[in-house]
Image (cartoon, rainbow, N blue to C red):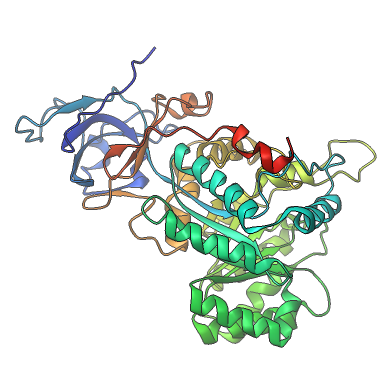
Length: 451
């Protein structure tokens, strides 16, 4: 059993002999044949990291055949030997629904269907939503994220209804209150037909003024091209990015992803478009998949897969369960060089009764569900580096000199160990110091659940 890590009280120290995927480290590396690492399927290498004043001061890659002390000028600086413990950059959770979260205790979805989830969530909002209710549940989620090692969160927030501004105001308050701990981004979530009217234009103006992102749910149908064109035009005129829900079903005729890419190319959209779910792609013909992904790549669209929620929620109308459900063509997407992200989606609400806003759990389950085979380092970027880049966060998701020392140290030394245990003993480092935070107790929300 590995002993608990204790870091020096001084903010200047070395983390020695850390196993890190090389694609998550930005440094000048020795030639590959001299690089000290494990077997190819592990895709890990040894590094020493010097931490000072809350930032990464230097990174040393350990060369094979050399003494581990070579190349380091320690000058009596405290040293912590990680003995090959793994390090990852802090997580970036790019697709969540914080305004809906943590209501399962008062509004469960017993039959587990998508339609029932929508109905129950709408009813819960009518009965319970207030500034205090939304703020406390959202902050509970942020406390979970922070404790598990997340540095940035993007959340979709229901807009357009009578109570939508309550949720958006709570989000703004939390964004300010948590500014020194978590980077928060908000996406306006409406159905895309909403943008056809004057209310949609007002929403676009609000997002431009208040630092939001335009988003929504686009359903297949004769009006979807008109809706997407209008949405992209509004975003383009205001220099806004777009984050959509598309094809969250198993209907092979649902090809909104294809339409979104074609529309973006047609109007010359220059912002960043992200499409979440894209499940129906997995039941379309190989030619349809190829054609769609070619357009997606040309349009510079990124794809977010949400396998935990989709596998739970979908396929429930079959006479016998379980049936096919809920993950997109992740291997084809990656092989095309299209940015791919995995994220939490809903947590403890009618859409998904589980989850704890833990980036490692998302990656762990995605490896199983998506059959993400070794080398695993190629998939690690989906929960840190890739979402950070898509969110415009240059200092997140990567370990590099002069960047903030925001990282997670695990007891696991190899990916097999990382994916076999929950790593509840992980040590989260923010700006060079351990957070020592634990996820909040569920009892904190008991009064909101009517307990």
